[in-house]
Length: 302
Length: 113
Image (cartoon, rainbow over all chains, first blue to last red; front, side):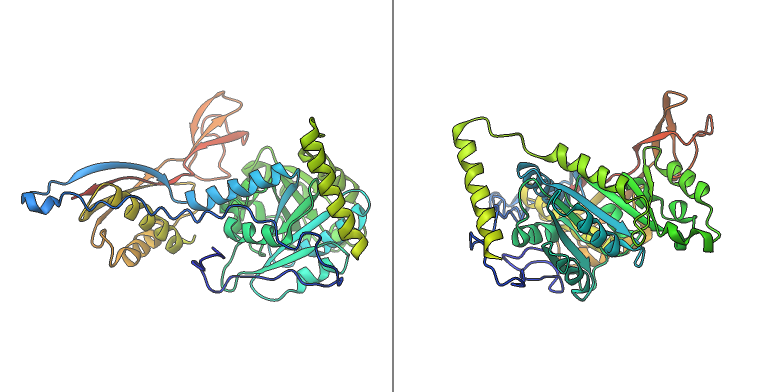
């Protein structure tokens, strides 16, 4: 959706960043990067009217343009922006009820003091999830898609501009609960992580292959419930590897904390790789000092 | 999935190309849809008809070329055909495959007047 001219679905709503802590951002204007709609109002061909010649012979024009090019271009812009700011972005996908939000809340609590986390939440309606994240003290913004079934790059671009995550931080994008559609839409993330809870059944990787193919990591959640279920763990992992030989698998429980150390380590490896290089010249160092002073001002204002 | 919004992308591409080439009418549009892409062909045809109404491509002939899925088999060390995600290598039966083709959705070319 394009916020500037309002084209696209009227139903998509990205919440204004709420003033929960009664602080104002040090720089009142939002990070906004050049907003290119991608509408090509190309040169008008008002030239020679072919009909005037009385003959219009059909001709073949090569096009070779991808149908998802528009989303992919915005996703790449997001990716570039995130890279410039040293932000490690993860697109969390799953069915509704797999435990994504609970896992995120727990993750944020455990990462406190280690690495800053910000969250973009996606749901058809309500701000329930963004509210839960904000209750941990981490910044979050809610996207309501209305009738929409997945987040797309344009929605994330708008959310990024309003959320303004800190440089050298982690960005978690919790997608709309849906094991089908989000697989096809690049948001600009570094990785898609699919959360599958053991109560959903071991047959999901083969039933929803596109999603498991698109993910770099599968988090098998709610493993504390395994003693009460007939869940074929080995088959689930083997099937996930059938549709994606390179997929990593971690078994976790967001409620008991089992397996979370490895998940946090995975995040920290990604965050450290994304972090920007230390400034190499005086101008870059001055910019970095200005950024840090702004961060300090925000923290002190809370 | 989302054949309607994909058809809208097709319309944008078709409009842009028609304008850039001074076309008065689009007679045909040829799409390449990979067999591994998340698109239902019949739904795509329906969406195309609906979305093209009122455009230069109204009543244009829609040709859809479905390209086969393909993968590199890491055990056979050669390209193989892949009918569906999750299928094994047709030669050696391994799942150690890297998908190389059949995922793309493109407008290939257009016949204009």
